[in-house]
Length: 64
Image (tube, rainbow, N blue to C red; front, side):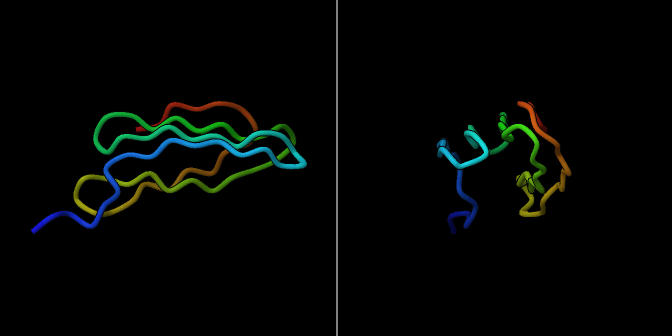
């Protein structure tokens, strides 16, 4: 049976606060950009189906 996890995703969107971006491949990399003067709750998926939660302020992050 195939895993219900999304194996990869990449996107960006402009907001009134600045650009939000993500580049993700399951088990390989997760990069996220949070606009200036904002905060984000980011949930990075694990291969076992669970998630790791990160509380981030503005900037670009490489997460595992």
